[in-house]
Length: 391
Image (cartoon, rainbow, N blue to C red; front, top):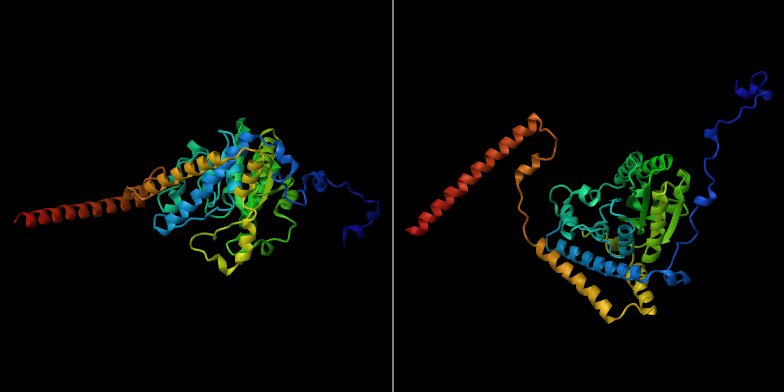
């Protein structure tokens, strides 16, 4: 017997509890039907010349950084490198919209964003070199460790932002993720917590078309990734990810909203990964050369150069200085990366637990003893070699 079949059921008209009602009007949360653009529109004339020139210098440096890091993988100095060539506008804007006290939560492809925020270019590559830890102090730089597991940094960003708000700290967390990361459970959990807590966090999705070899159409049937924001009760913004000025503006507005107590925002930047997923990937197996070439006509550097030229802000001197600065950075990166790091095997045990376990102490003592034996053997061999040469 159902409720409706019970005696007196016709007169039973319960009032739905508040949890049954929509908490938010969906219309203001919906993204625009087309990615927001500035360059090539009338709005470009309002962009500050200083911002345009700074964005341009960072884009040129970022392109050179990607090229140099890719070359280092071919020389065996890096184990792997996920290039962000073609996505420099997203990387640069993400770094420039944050204040010093804010936090950046990057994914594995966001080394350029970390460098644009001020991180040492070598330290940004340390994790990809196979060295210990993330290569830098996250607290010093306010940059979380580069995250290789997909989307696991997003709940961390929400937790930090929520904790900062509870303490009364003026902090915004900007969490970067790729389109592939939006298919992970961590993505959905992070958005839900952020919206319920109204945490000061901005989720920035770089939709570069592929999750390794999986195209976006095989990951979601949503109108856009930005539309996913509505289901969690936060605004979704859709922006041209190759338009550096548009990305900077949209992210800036989202950061300002979060800082003022307005809660989180999901920003989707539509861009394209010009290089393969990593140096270990063969992108020709899942996309055509013609597709790549079509996106080259929408290159973020060329788009910005066109605007700067039309406004008389870009001449040969400005262009040459940007390239020269990028080359100096690349030369320093090559020189420092070509020096073999000095590694201490005992570091394996130094940062596992605050207090070492019995097993770790035993393993450390065993390794130390083996190292001492090898050192003694090397000294004995050197002595024998010296004796042979003296005869």
